[in-house]
Image (tube, rainbow, N blue to C red; front, side, top):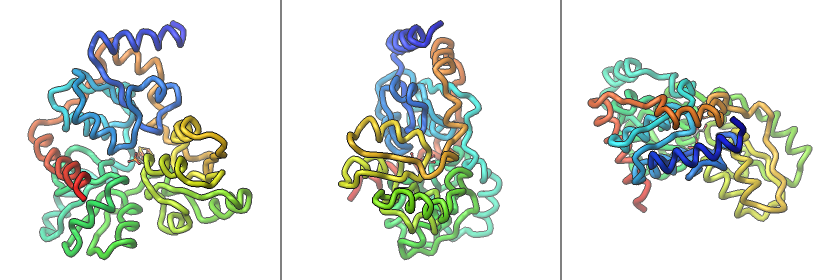
Length: 305
Ligand code: 13P
Ligand code: SF4
């Protein structure tokens, strides 16, 4: 089957099955262009919670599809790239967090959406990189534990008055960004703005002209008067940045900004999953009900002023 035949079939199957294709900004351009909706992890969660489709085909990583299933339990949710995990989400287990809570019963658990359903089920509230700063303000003055991203946790503690413990997890891609890389690129492109995702380490984040989620970075590039940008997040976002702007030069901080898990979704994997209803996401009922409470609170607090 040729690429255009496959695209034609995907669109046909989508209609036949009343399916919606959701894609994260880190997906390959061809997948982003085929999707009904492209967004950051927060937007995709919201889209999943309100869709009237019968089936959600999630082009992203496992925790994202699992979150969609928790928010839309009556829908069939497919993750075409079935072993596309997020290594950061795997840095903390249910047992780890349970033991932590037993030792620290006074700490509320704030959980990054990049986590398993089991970890969400033990948490008080979820956050994503686009709403973490807003949500954490509701918990100022309380004793908190942030799991599992040490970098986003450290960033929140640096910017707000918080009694915050942080789990030592990290994203292997963003955590590897260095001050030297920023200095080198700034020397090469002195007039460009440096923008970064908060999963990078604080010394790198502190060099940035703007810090935000993938959606935030995209919006910043669109609204800034700068003509050039050095981007400190996964290279997939450049597709929308270039598509949605004109006359701006956008470069990645380093060619190593590539998430292998995100790139596991290919046209063929997507087509076969949709054709055969393959790689359905299931979440244990008790875990899903508990995890949903933390996700619902996130959705509620994100919308309040
Ligand atoms: P966003 O919430 O910004 O989409 O980030 C998700 C992610 O996995 C970043 O590495
Ligand atoms: Fe996980 Fe990092 Fe990939 Fe985001 S970029 S999905 S945090 S491994």
